[in-house]
Image (cartoon, rainbow, N blue to C red; front, side):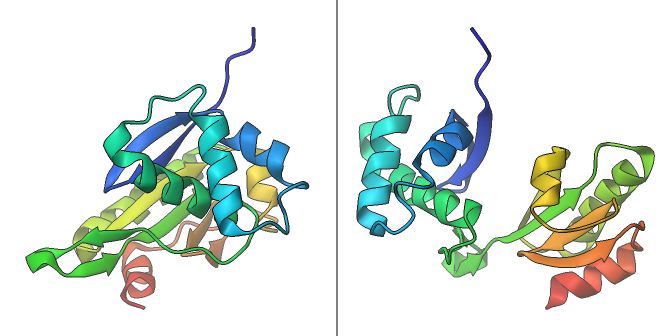
Length: 170
């Protein structure tokens, strides 16, 4: 039996591994493309709860996270994850992706991004994307590449930490 994919998604400020998320989204893509968010969310929840434990008290949060990931996966508008910042104020969590197969330049770029995030003190998730098919979805023709909140900021070079910090201010 082939091993199923596990995708980490943010639920209530915690990264949770979800088994089969990518597979379920691909299965649902065509049939649910023009379906309401409520129906998509319900179907995602139904299918994903077969292989994933979802606590009763968190069902609504998981459903919202599944829908957010589905819409993001297919380039539809989605609600960003909101986290509690200092003094209880709500903040949008910045999403940064480092695209590259894992070569030394990609590793240096990933480290530069993590250093910039730490120095800037921003609330961000940094995700390494090594899958060639996933990288291709961004339309970049070179790696490493850096994507900040869906916007391509750098392609084919290791950006300096100071430059990355400028991207994080905006």
